[in-house]
Image 1: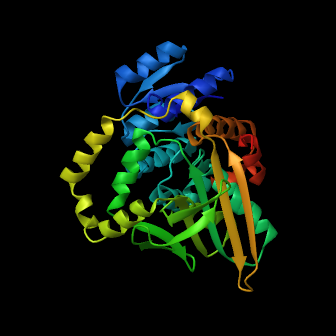
Image 2: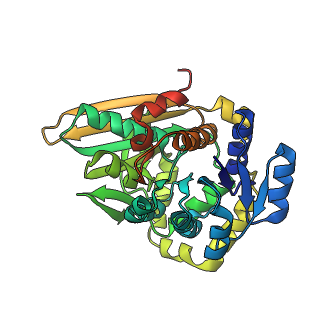
Length: 343
């Protein structure tokens, strides 16, 4: 079976490539930049393909590919042509996005995926494997739940790609799910004191992918996602709400993107090994009953490298019903157990 890592030369794409190689797999590496793609392919002795994300090019290069792990952001721009190309060629689609709009797009194309006989499962990394599995386990313990809160505590630095995605989202504000619908809300919309697993901390809501995926996993109509935040950051983001619309201007986005480009590509291995992540979930029902779960998992980027490869191989080796999946619906909530860190 042939599979491809598209965007293999990016920070996370390269982590996925090296993990696949260590596990003895031989994915085809692909991307838009010919030099970067071929240099990486030569270093790891794998086949390379170079193509742009337009329909003709995608279909030409995917016609003999059974599965793609899509790693080239920004996914709000790149995911749609790649998913539609996969539908056209009968190629399974996985990606490592955390962008709400991409999860919603993938869900909207579920019928087309079913007709094409393919699996479409975005978010096969830290966005959103562990939180999705926590959500599934909580729902199994409380079938009549009405509210779900999820979150994570990570001290790891963000990669350049993740930072750029966060900056692109600032102008849109936050997001939560209310009564089954995704609702745009102000930045730092809600705050609370939460023990993610490493002591109680001030936390704020963020527009994380689970606002989309946890709903399709659990059916719980009210969902919020939290991360720790300092009082200073919360105050700054609340103030930013007054003029966040200006952050959507192209020249502002370009300025911030150039600043991010001066940062390191992402955390080095020592930093990843040192900084595991606590994942937390809380589910409740109309009677006021509450259940909480916490797990300590691998660093987000290490988890993404392993998760993307392991789910790619799982899809290739199993006859799965075609259509849209979240990670826990694809593999089961036990998927999180493969990525637990030492407590």
